[in-house]
Image (cartoon, rainbow, N blue to C red; front, side, top):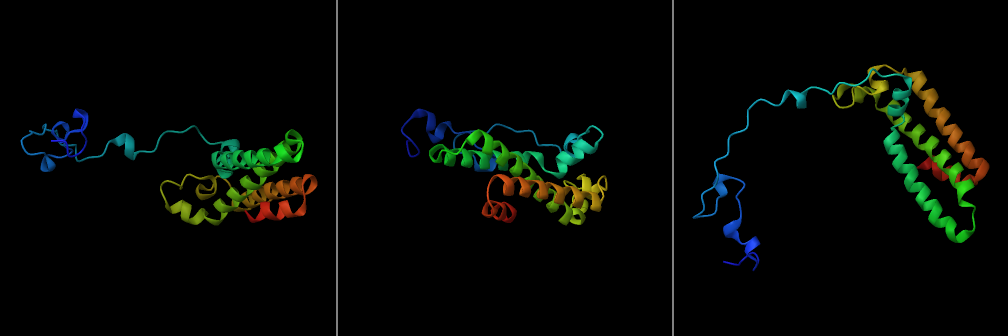
Length: 170
């Protein structure tokens, strides 16, 4: 039978069913041992982490991985735009990158400030610095607005007001 594909590799006779209830007629399905009813303890218990310090709390508050992806994407767009426009891409690109890091980090911190109460109720996010109380609300707000201010001032100094406005809106 070649209703799926003409190659022997893809014929139904050679297919292994995923369940004994869906077995192909004439082919015996292998017996599969049932999975244990209890979940694996390693999957239900949180992984042991090093004791958080202020630097790791800031990295988590600023969502460093997300911020890095945002900045890499912005820098790539800047570089591609500067190739044809004769903008000195290294100098301005580095300053734009620093401003992007500060703006993105500040926005991430503000997001955590706004969601700290709901984060505290969810198992996955309860360990975040603001939700767990390792960083206080005033401290989180201060750091967030400081990062946003630094990023905005860098953009204002080395680009233009339109870029600052677009940076703040995004």
